[in-house]
Length: 262
Ligand SMILES: O=P(O)(O)OC[C@H]1O[C@H](O[C@H]2O[C@H](CO)[C@@H](O)[C@H](O)[C@H]2O)[C@H](O)[C@@H](O)[C@@H]1O
Image (cartoon, rainbow, N blue to C red):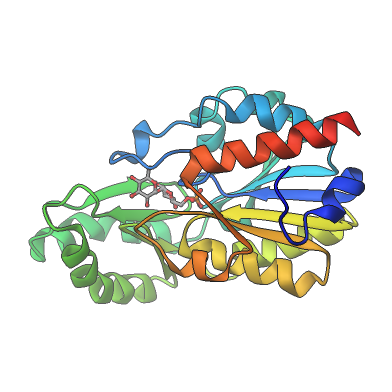
């Protein structure tokens, strides 16, 4: 196992470790159509081994929990897996989903969005209806960065009008309810599990809050960035940077091999 600061606590006491993982860009390679994403083929096997030996494996994602399970066949076999969807508003565990009532602003945003995008000439934008939130993607537009920048202000106004906030990500602006983020979700989960160590792996801006939560927990821990050319903010803050989902799965595989021998 490579020598990473903070990992020793996980290796010597795996039963006390929480392994937190983002989904898109971390366990699932980035593709241009969100509906066509899929988990890295080796990830379910590696996570199944890890799940049998660590305190908990949790996926913290901006996706609905059910979508992650659809895009990640085999995940339901991971022992004790918890999926915290919608940035932690939603929880899947042992086949059951729990969530608060849907935010009232979302249906209004869904209704107004097509006309707004039309009026802005944003025909290259893709609307992703996530049930409790709506994401607007620009990855498939001819100039994704320019369109993303042009949409930020009007989408922020639309979100505010309906009591929502804008969550920026990799060529995406998501209109979602406030009051939860991956940092808060991870902190609650660490407390619930009496964690004695923690690893969090992410790739995008929404994962920065989870990095902060690792540091704020005071636990021995490791923050891992699934590196990409698209987002650099995480790499600057991570204890270790690996090469995208291939690198994540390789690192988790090393960890799984060591803890399964102990
Ligand atoms: O918290 P995550 O699990 O990382 O989810 C964040 C968003 O991921 C998805 O969008 C991203 O991945 C797409 C598929 O590879 C890609 O096309 C898009 O450009 C990325 O932003 C997902 O569609 C969003 O709903 C999630 O919030």
